[in-house]
Length: 320
Image (cartoon, rainbow, N blue to C red; front, side, top):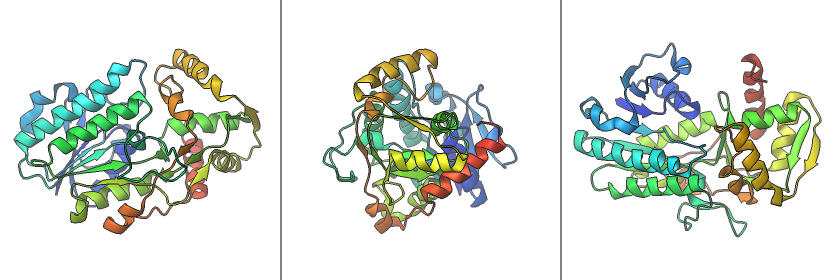
């Protein structure tokens, strides 16, 4: 089984690549010349050195793959146009090349995001068939990419995955919260509800979706069945770090200001003007019953276990 992975050097992509290799897949990864491949060291992989911005130049190298996992994407930027260029346009171009070069492909997996569906506005977890109402530019760019995937459904057998908040070793987004709580600070702008998934559970769900016939043409939410509050999450991080943080109450009206400041401090950080739009909504939860019914997916890692393992990894690698 030959598999191609984009975004293999990143957080989710590196874990997926490891799991595919361990499962016996013959894995090839797309990497840019500037990519850091440290997470992939020791794995038996083939490499295609190219950029999705010039994927047509490597068209011949994309022949003969049974599975393609498109994990690469842009989650943070200061220019809205970058989201549509990377997440939407590059996905469309990759699909076009694959349709021309890989007529016998078994499955194309697109890693989207719950941001493409948007938050729950009525308090009920968002289902795959719920109207998609993204509230951020990032979410809109991912939804348009999903539409591009569906436009090729007569030529490319595809499955779309929508994870919510993903956490685990190598993640840099939740690292921000770990570092704040380690400093005994817990910014709080009201109780929020979240679906979450530990990275190894997500990876197993992605592979199940790729290999299962019932997943063809479907979109799945992959998350733990439990719903957690922001206080739950902060509490588990606090326990894992052995600290008691000070809860700093902030009005939601201050979020745009924090996004502006965060963007000035770190252009690639999680605190930016687009991301804080998502922070302004209180319910980011999703229903996972379809994935459980169709492909037998059920996340095993509890929030407490995942947070502890993540904290241990951060400590070992001196990230906190």
